[in-house]
Length: 475
Image (cartoon, rainbow, N blue to C red; front, side):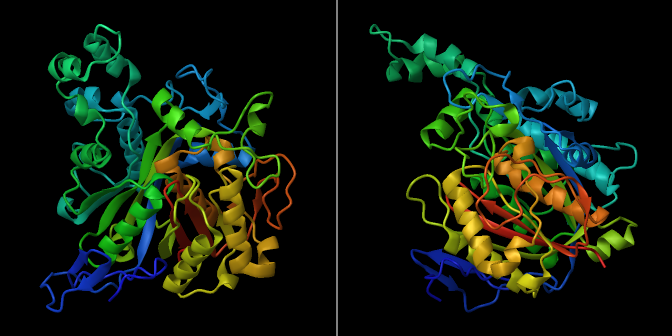
């Protein structure tokens, strides 16, 4: 089967072996004898654990968004003076301390957790509490509600930036006579000034590693690093793992912090950050506005508990939403913005097809809405292309003006909010300023009641991955 259509990625059901050889995707003619059940299981979200500048857990996050209270503030975690954007979404250090959410027996491991890992560990605990589960990480006495080898974990991660001070302390011992870093000295003496476990703090798979150890998840595990689409791609992976019977539940989502000088520098070079000069804090991120000039970054994300509906029902759990459809596409990346309306629209169409729904069935949309003009324009064009005249009447829910762009964790925040919208049959307040010339409901709005059956969640990433997730009210 030639792999020529970037819009069409059929999901194998686990019965066949996929072999990637150059430009061609071939399916082995001999079936593998994998003992998976058919992909007919309904998958629900039974717990949501967002973590961001709005707080820890879905209750704090939802309350802030209903009140129209943004978490963006002038940055204090480092001096942003050399960068265009001085505003971001920092998690309150008094609200969240990772030592307080891991078992006492595991606290020594905190010293090898970078910020991204800390956020993932905190989000996992919040999600497990919300789902009414018990694991060794939250209840050492009772242990697991779900058999450990039936609990998987797929987490989206960013390309983690090392701590600048740690690198500086090592680099300074590697200077040559010209006061420049001498790579020979670096290899002989400089690297010796890094702590022995230094690399274990910054590997992207360390998020899933620590979460699975703390909560004794022994089922399928994976890490996906695709920028802002990482959370939704991980959710899609978890969905398929459960559907094919390889697990009964999965922790899934993503977390990331780009609130550090190295990540800020990269985002500045890519032209993605807003210029906050002379702007009020709430005016920095203006999705779909003609005055928008970029995004602000945040730290955070979230983990979700995905379960087979039969498993959730059997244990007396409460399904927050049902995962009805999912699709991903790839845009070609020519300018670092990585967004084309055609490819985003294809993701929406394929998600609708996988859910066996048409566009008339979507009652609300949670777009990426980051404030980067070219990305917003592609996303808006895609929505208008798919929904036509209906696009003007579909409510949009915006999260980035509240939390900043949390990158690998952003999609998990979006999905968490969509779940709460379906549960409460209401929409949070919408923050946005500036002039809107698109026929979309993206301007400021108060929190309000709404009749919601299905919600579309979109992610558009730097790197070109686009995802569309469709959540439904549980029946």
